[in-house]
Length: 551
Image 1 (cartoon, helix red, strand yellow):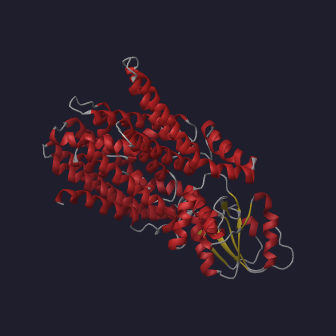
Image 2 (cartoon, helix red, strand yellow):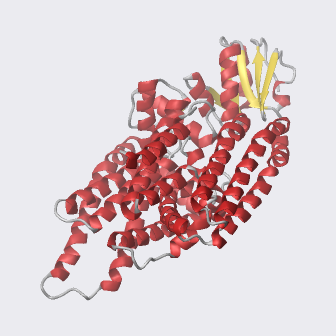
Image 3 (cartoon, one colour):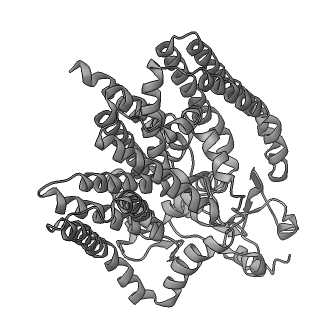
């Protein structure tokens, strides 16, 4: 029982970090708002085939995430907590899988370190608490590759069961995120080719060569059939219901166009994700290069198989996503379990065989990141000025100080390692990273959230619901999903070329108008009673207008 205590504490800490205060912040960003509203409308309408946002069909993503969130809505009620619960549980499961696998391969300490490295990365701590699809994809990718590795060493019934598990995981991943769900297929295929091609021609003439070909052929056939059985029915139903608009949106715009050109301004250089990983996986990133290169001669067959798989996993995620045009930080989330497992094994080895250069690199990295963090309030003021949020930048100072203090504890831990007290050093490094993560979750995000797309609209919708309950809500040049989610119903939404139609609605009764703050000319001369402002959006309390309102 005592042997299980560290892992039990890891899971308790994981649950506290990933589930604690999960619904405290409003919806963050366009994607989280879209997915939450699609799930809410699915739960409300009972139509589990066609996702809808603000009453209209929504073809951008397959439905698995909406299904899971809709089930949570029907179980716990509609809330941001329920919208984020599937992703948080997927993150929790992935931490458990990572720790358990690391313990099985390299020992209990290595497994515990791998779980800690994954949990305390900023990437998982932040995205694991958001109702988007990157962490569930990470979880399904991990499950699929566990099945693949088990098949590679299987005997008996597992030779069939593991390809079924792999196909099921991949089929669910495709239902989650389209072609990106095929990521485990690419990783497993590349690994199999890399590990099997050097041995080509060594089979004997007794039939083992035939079996060596037949076994992977049957496994691939099983994977394909299971994957198709899981994923195809929904795509077939949607193609029959909606035809070309569905196919062109999902395949053309959401897949091919994202590869060819940056979508919605989300571009970057080929080095973009190296920067993302350097910050979001610090300090564990320092131990990744030697872990990638390490091939200990004492490694057994299972360790060698997994080491090579983890290296391929890392490369097969990082390289393709670095080359495509559209870039978002969450896209590389599926490679974090691979990095955590590699780092867990490397840290376990370095506790007994410390290398000064690695700990010096931790000190340098922590000092550099602390310097960047100190710029956060001034950068926040500069970036916030165009959207009317410069006044909130001063609220970033206390959490930034705490964040810097966390890096200070990491520096202290690395300095302790230089004096050959590796275990005490590791405890300090973990503590410092938890302080940094806590500063971001408890201090930074609450300040930023009202000014992010989704957060500002949610705040204004809550104000309209509380202060203007009898008024019709109308949006002008404002995305509707976050407002519709808060109000629990579709809302009228007008673009810049529909200003006259928006103004004509003012004759129907009192109106709560949400619009860009810079468009004062839209309501100039109207009898506006009250104005609320959040970032670059305003909520206007306009009584019923008689006559013909003009711009």
